[in-house]
Every structure is written in C-alpha cells, then in structure tokens.
Amino acid sequence: MADSRESDTAGQAVLTRRDAIVAALALAAGTLVATKPEPAAANTDDTMILGRINITAGTTYNWRTATGVLAPVYTQASLNWDSGTGTHHALDGEVFAVAGAAGAGVRGTAATAGQFGVIAEHKAAGGTALRVNGNASFSRSGKASISKGKSYRTVTGLSGITPSSMILVTLQGNAGTGRYVRYAQRISDSAFRVVLNTSAAYKVSFAWMIID
Image 1 (cartoon, rainbow, N blue to C red):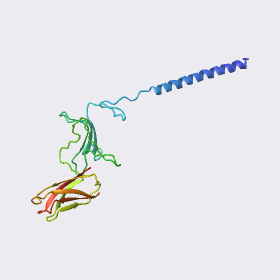
Image 2: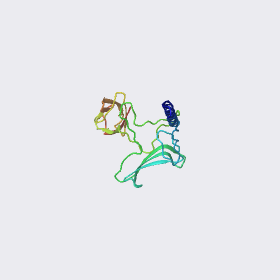
Image 3: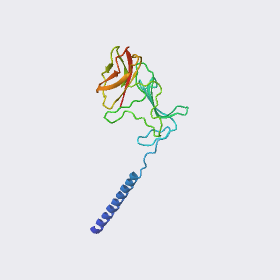
Image 4: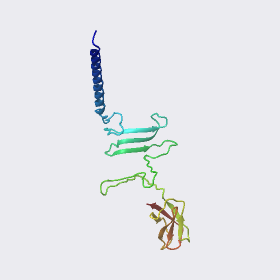
C-alpha cells in the first residue's frame, strides 16, 4: 500500500500545476484586454464612430422625411458638403419647401446668460466671420412713425434693453425742413424714445435697431 504522505505530495503537485495554469490564463487574458487596440477611424462607406476621427472622400447626408421613406424630404443635414464648384462646407443645413412645413437650415440656442446661440468666427485678421446671402431679419428691429406736430415717439413692447444697448434710428422720410433725430433714449428695459430737434411738419416714419 502506498504511503499516505506520497499521496498527499502528489495531490499538492497537481493543485500547484492547476493553480499555475489558471494564473497563466488569467495573466494572458488581462494582457489581451490591456493591449486591445482602439477601433480604427471610420473611412468612406464605413459606420461612423463617435469620439473618433472619421475620414471620408464624400458628403454624409442625414434626411428628415415625413414617414421615414425617401420622399418628401423636410430637412437635410450634410457633413463635408461639396457644392461641386470648389466651395466646401464642413456643415450644411437645408430645409425644403414642403406644404405645411416651416423651419430653418441651421438653428442654435443658449439657455444661460453669457452663452451664445451661434458664434461666427474668422481666425484670419480682417476675415469675414458672417456672410448673409439674401434678406436679414432681426427681432430687435422695426419701424415706427412720429405724427405731424409731435417731436417724439416712444416704442414699447420690447425686452432686454440695457443702459449699454445701442439704439440706431434713421428717418425714412421728410419730417420738414431742418427736422432731424436729436437722440434716441432708453426709457426702460422694454421701451425707448426717439426725439426730434423740433415738432415734425409732416408725419414721418423711422427705422430702428437695437444692438448689444
């Protein structure tokens, strides 16, 4: 009969080899996890990878349609848009003329004071940061009039007029010989007053804009 001490020694040797194999496998697995390469950057026709540089030789389109089918298209957002005439846009937005639909090609909003909805910046000295093709509309602008025989007009119903706001006013007609805008004055955060140098000989309109 074998000595019980020899049996115990053999058992310990088996356990030792088993533990060594388990440890080696764990170490190998940890090494594989630690050395696993990050996903490669997406290229043309690949799936876009968030948080990584994606390279493409073409334009990427995102269409918003009525029912998820191809048409009608309401809006289109394009990355790396090429006009075909040598003009390149990093981001292009377009809203299409669809009955009952209204919108904008690009919209930016901010919710906290000191933030900006949209920033247009040119890094070169003297470069144009913002270019507008077509009409421009501003919510803090408008037209009003001064009646004949009056020397001022108060414009109300506004908001956010501060002591540092710049109120620009231009007469749109003839108020009479020698009549002109003497000054525009903030009355409150919701109103301002346009004052002529003397009473208007005729009813006259003026255009105004507030800039901060």
